[in-house]
Amino acid sequence: MHSYHVYEAGNSYTGDSGYPAKAFTYPPLTYPDSKLLRLAENAYEAPFSMAGDAATLRDLLNDSQNTPPDSLVEQVFGNQQRQQRLALEHLGAPAKITREPSEIATAERVIFPGVGAAGSAMRNLDELGLLDTLREVVAGGTPFLGICLGMQVIFEHSEEDGGVDCLGLVPGKVHKFTPDSPLCKIPQMGWNTVEIVREHPVFASIEDESEFYFVHRYYPVPSASEYVLAETEYAGIRFASVAGKGNLVATQFHPERSGRIGLQLLDNFSRWDGTC
Image 1: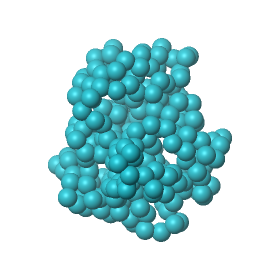
Image 2: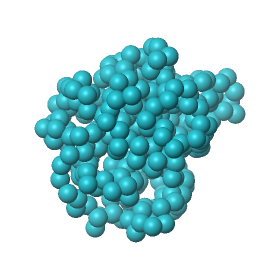
Image 3: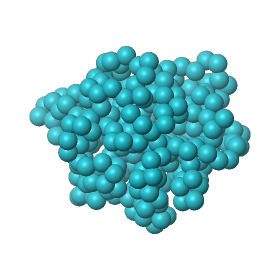
């Protein structure tokens, strides 16, 4: 059984977390056979302000934090580490929080989800000495999964926060949605269709044009079509909702919020050896 080391890097909800300053309801999860995930489902279904989100989940799940050490690392921004860990535990992959470069460097796999702003995320990673660690992990062939903001910062540059240089793991940039119609709401917040354009092991047993859950104001633009694995349309833009390069794959949507189809993607990643 694998375990995940989870790192919490930044709690800003003013950037590409996409969360408005008001209460709203998360989409319900469907994990009826897991006590922990039923607890998380109750938290999701109760509206609460995002300012209290991390604390709410932390209090609810405080009695479930002990997990085995070693082997699989989850690198997470903001409060996402709790949600990701519950989904992974449901799949038989317990999680542990870490910010130790040595633990991340020796992991069998790295999952790098997040919410927040690109600028604060990159500053936090720099201050913790993790920029080179993450680059070395990918360069060394370790299977790597970026999620939401964790997808955006794998590219070279983001328009967020006035312009931010990012990890540069995949050639490309991140742009802000600028819809022509005032009726088009930004951030995109909700379910949307993901059209697979290039086969990949993480799509195993996932039907084309399945729906996943998105929360974001910015969207990635890889520099070449070879890095685009799936696409989604929003605000008049057809953007890369899944990108990949070698042993790295990344999703703009949140698998952990996308019900059983999201669990399938996480399960596929947990079995993937990093080759295509």
